[in-house]
Image (cartoon, rainbow, N blue to C red):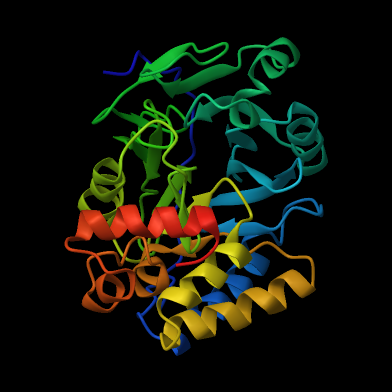
Length: 324
């Protein structure tokens, strides 16, 4: 179980209702979701300092800021806008995180680490030196630089250490990309609040991570038996901007998938403007992500699979090659 987390005082709050965030597994549902999210982001950030960091609200109090790192990584700042505090997820490039925290006028209190790769853990040591009292929380299944609180499958804690448990967070073990990979499922409390999954390199928009230290059976378990059972409206914050490549491959698998076609158009528009394509929702992912759809008859037939796990294996081999 996780070690005792530092508690921080919190104010009471009453989130406003945000109807319609659940995304239907249809093209028009995808578009409607993104229009709604843009509108909510304006509301949530109205009183926050301006900065070039796209914001995704989880409620009227909690916001996730996107921090681009390296060539295609994303770090995430989960922010309590009332307290002015934030938690960084996979801060591989410490300079980028520090700049974002300073420009947004926030206080960094905690770091979450999904797995051991350097583009996710590279900021730990530097950030600990620069930020007094910073707590590094991460997978307990593999070595993590500067780790202070090790977490494992089934562990639960409040993201901001609130005694009111306003942001309960669950740890889900997802071994495969690395043997010790975990993801973090955050459930902000209050009417209309939207859950969020920080999926590291396990689940991407339209794809999944390479099986560096695991098997197709493990990734099937991760995506289909664990993650797919979370609410459809869950926002998926992955660690890389791989969406265009992933959806190009997905079109080879299901060229007639209308939800996929709609997503491709939206992604092209986003990237043409230099904007991120993350987050998506789990409802979306189950409508067009071939790895989450590996058990669908159309996907299995396309790759010539004898079972959903075999389909997962063949899909990953095809993606590694760049073609079915």
